[in-house]
Image 1 (cartoon, rainbow, N blue to C red):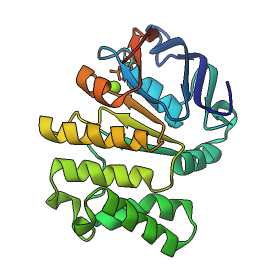
Image 2 (image 1 turned 30 degrees about the vertical axis):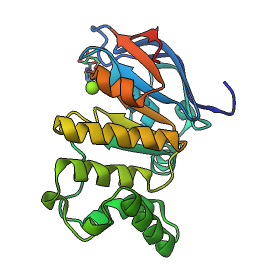
Image 3 (image 1 turned 90 degrees about the horizontal axis):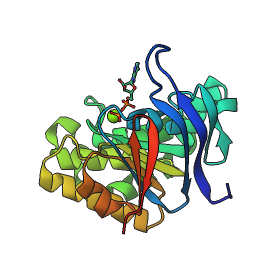
Image 4 (image 1 turned 60 degrees about the vertical axis):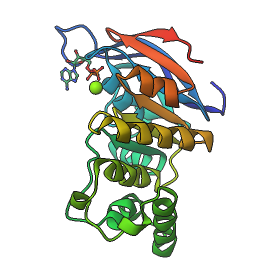
Length: 228
Ligand code: ADP
Ligand code: MG
């Protein structure tokens, strides 16, 4: 592990039910700054479990989880919440936007939760909406947007606090093929401008287009593979 290591899982096991096999079974994985790692594997192989552990929304039963310089197992719940707000951006299959807030307010939300300067947050939100090509939608409500536009809002929100790590769980799973291609292209551009990225997908095309490395899970274990 170096200071360029953004994610380090060492011998991580997560077992939801004592009678069932573990969802993750002694998984060891590292992600370096600037990488775009695709996590693939059949349904039930442990992809979301791994993402949740990295995001700090779930805890390992054993092994070490270090993300962005923090040993997550040593953080209290309050410290974990602060870590998630400040260091991690997540985009979900179904966007998880708040429908009764405008696009701008959805994007501003992580900054408000983190505290800090309001003018700086508004400037950052405006810059993100501009760079994602949805500046003209700032005052619209998510229900009025297309799937691709909603996913762009979700990406802007995820990037609001300049996360060390952007996580995506099936980011193209709920949009049509053409929109999916745009989301993948966006992720690729973000990575090329330096954003470290971990993308869970069951779609090999998504992995091939936006990832620099592939991790395959099967029955909670890693089968390593190379891309490109
Ligand atoms: P994937 O995202 O690859 O489809 P998951 O990480 O969601 O896989 O699930 C891995 C395994 O853990 C599966 O067998 C799943 O049924 C089980 N599992 C996931 N979440 C829970 C939970 N909250 N409670 C019990 N079992 C779970
Ligand atoms: Mg999943």
